[in-house]
Amino acid sequence: MRLLDRETFFEPCRAQLPQRWVTTFGGLHYYRKMSRSYSLFSRWAPAILMIVAIFLFSSIPARQLPRFGLLDVWVKKGGHALGYGFLAVAFWHGFKWDRKLVWLALLLSMLYATTDELHQSLVPRRHPSPIDVWIDSAGAAIALVICAWVRKSARKSTSTKGST
Image (cartoon, rainbow, N blue to C red; front, side, top):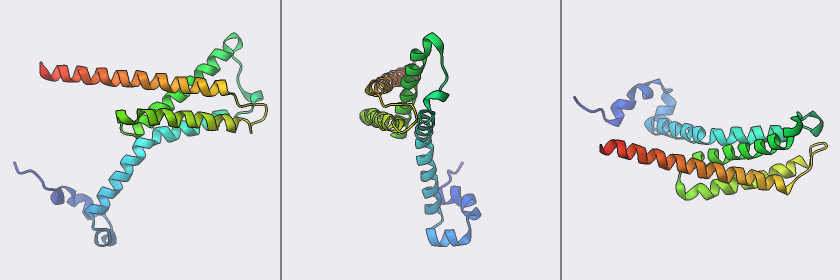
């Protein structure tokens, strides 16, 4: 069985491109460029969605926030930690899970937590709180540690299955 070379493999895709793209952009080069940009979008889409979600939640005026009775503080602060934990993991996903850049994912989460508290100062009856920044940062750090541990465990179990 003959393996296909790149030209033969991409020929159906190239045939569907408008002729001016094939001649202007070199066809296959343009197709590869499009797939790279899709890959970039798919890596960073979770982080962008989390940023938008956090922004929208922090835009809610204090009067419209739900009350959870005795658990109000725990639910709201837990939501802060959980949201920023997801954001930190989404940032790390954007960095292709590079272990050398996990600190940058944490730093970006902390920076966004700080700007989010400044944003809350502009929302009626909300106020910025350094304690919230600390809780957000702790949630991000804990989520990154758990995620790194899970990824390491998964790599170990995969390598032991392959060797037996």
